[in-house]
Length: 511
Image 1 (spheres, rainbow, N blue to C red):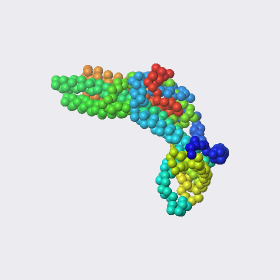
Image 2: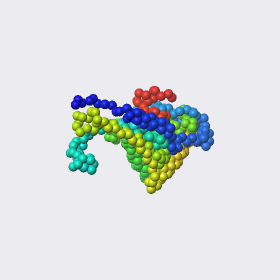
Image 3: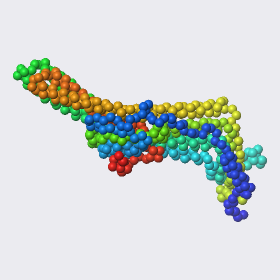
Image 4: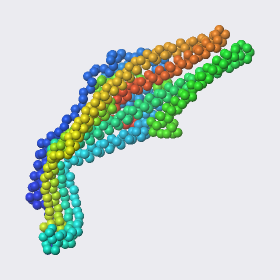
């Protein structure tokens, strides 16, 4: 007998599969998604961040970095905000950190993982189609085969294509996909937060390095002055013009000043080591050029976003929003799990006693199935899982509220710090100038014998303290400006990617 070519499924089967497909589509379209529909909470209904209205500009100071800073309400933070400090070295450091820090690579990988998981979850919306083939060696009993003595042994070959589909009548699958997409949104916000945090850390540590370097230089200069004073005191003691107690007082003051240098140098080394980590290198490999305060320019035009925009700009708020969205979707998943599940299945294939006879006449086999599952008793498991999901939603909502409150506090703190930093710098500049004039006058008086060592030492000590505090006030003003930029979201946008050196150089950023 000649072998017949492979035959398609029979017409009744085709019509049945078409009917099941149309039924599935109509039921899916008619189905609803149980559980709450997500809506992001509203931002606080306020028109400013601080209790009192901001002044148009900060105070000025007769010192370096003493220019007034103007607050520009309703303006967005520049995307590459660190470039507004006008330092090519600072910009280079941020670029290196964004390009080489493992924390960036980790955040990007976590985002890709979450996005792929969300795409994978979307596959549940489509029927599953599987092909299978196999062979089994059997011997059936007389009871099973209806043949005296039993049938076989024989080999049964089979090949089939099966289709399965679970109808998403109540939206449980769609809510699950929604939750996975919200997790991807969360990881995207986390990536943006990593960019922002890393850039802020590099800028802040660099400014701290510049401040410590200036403090070391100023202290070393004062040490040189005091050594010269000690030399004079020892010479005058030898000729009997001054007493031993005066010389000892000068020596003690010199030793006290020298003792402040090692801690400053230790802090400077620690900051440099921290910068190396931010930039993706070991301390031994770190070769960044030294940064001085005079190399950094104080930004004078300070953008202050509207409070209503903060929830879109701050990555941590967007991350909290995504977690709230995911928690909302999980309530829908838990609710759908308590409702009936309808499953459609079908298969078409061939079974033969010889592999060569597969798909020949009389070997076709097919099946259609419709299943309905309604949970009746699970020991309270499904009910408590739904309640747990609802509690998770309540927690995520409270976390979102707290994140927003903390963000508004951060902005208010930074804005007020800038106002008071300007006043502190002005006062400290005046104190440093007065201490410098007093020291100059006391030195002249000491030279002509009109005053004693103790007065000179007191004048040197006062000037040292005033000068170091002035340096710290300059650095604080710069650092708090960077803190405001980061508190406002740092200019990162939802679809922003890591900037490149070509696009984020200071020359490409509007002032």
